Image (cartoon, rainbow, N blue to C red; front, top):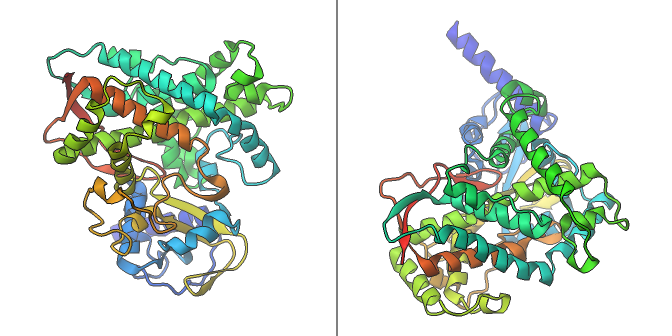
Amino acid sequence: MSTVLTGLIVFAVTYVLLLHFGVIKGTRLGFPGPKQYPLVGSLYAIFDAIKDRKLGERLRDIALEYGKYCEVSIGMTPILIVSDPEAHQAMMVNGDFERTDMLHKALFNKNALFALPMGDVWHKHRKTLQPAFGPTHLRQVIGHVSTKCDVFTRQITHDKKQFVMSDLFRAITKDVIGLTAFSYDFKAVEQFLTSEFTDETDPITQVLHTMQKRAFTPEFMHEWLGYGPNTQPTKRNLESVELVLREMMAQKRVRVPEEYDVVDRLRSEKNGFTDDEIIGEAHIFIVGYNTSSSTLTFLFKNMGMYPDKFKKLLEEIQAKKDEPITIESLGEYQYLDYFMKETQRLNPVGSMLNRTNRKPTVLGGRTIPANTSVFYSFFAVQTSEEYWPEPLVFKPERWEGLVPVRGTFLPFGAGPTMCLGQKMALIEIKTAVICLLRKLHLELVPDQDLSINYSVTAFMSHGLKMFVSQR
């Protein structure tokens, strides 16, 4: 009886995932990959990774084992895994491929640029938002980051104290995106210092975690699994986020166009966005602060794991400790740039990209049927021996004079959908590193689990704990 029940469960799971990823095509693509079985295909090779939110790492492992073009299948529905830099042009730049509905299903608010399919509405959103990342706002980022880092460092004494630094970085980046994009101070750093802001208590972070789960489950199952907007605690978290965003909009003052932030630009008579569209953009901007906070977390993790590299980084920062931080001076921190790029290479916040082809396309010497689900594994490309000597060794020095092979290092994507906030993120992250290391001594808490979940975005599985004291 138990065997029959197990079989039924496997069949049900397979059927549900088939519905999720597309109609049954009944054919394989002809690429190597994990062994296929009747009914389930090679679902066994990725199922636990989907469940544990580690699909990015699993796809990397499969790609490195089976080659630049390989496939897995869910039932009879094939999924192509690509780790060939030459394919990035077709998948991200030329317009031959488009977003799948994976992220659209994950999002609760469908009005944001990130969720929209490419087209007239998408272009309108992107064109409207682009000036909000111009030089004026980029310069403001440095001041906002410095202020929020000072709020934290002023509370630190010469006595070592343990902090969950991943929570601090979330607080800093949340406040900075609020101040820069919406002229609104969430005061998350202040809440962090009173233990009111943690991963568990921040509704925005909890909404993000739920979205990661929604991305890989069929939409009709969201309510049943507790991921729907009407199930608790998701409903409560969404209501909290909505309340903050409405409050933020209500407090907006009239500005001249030169000072417009994101909400001002969307609200202007020229653009005429509805309140729901504005809330959608604000929602995804705020949720997006987690990508910058994860990069900061991975940077400080690597500082603790590689003390000789950290020493060199610290010497560079301390040598300029009395100099003001400006957009121009950030370019002088050469080793910081190397350290950050090496962190992004080995610990990518975005480890994979999911696309589908509009029409039959040639990839890897084979014609791929239209509407095939294709994953591009940044993670596999960035850890391949073909492009990186000693690929798993953390070596910031490798970046001195290095121009990576085209398509082998794309931390912010490529083509029309490249991250709009790329420059802002780089300035924010580098400024935070400099501000904190100028004043603080940091060391990893020993014997902690430093594993990383590589899902839609990457994050530390158990946070990052460090001892902190004044220099």
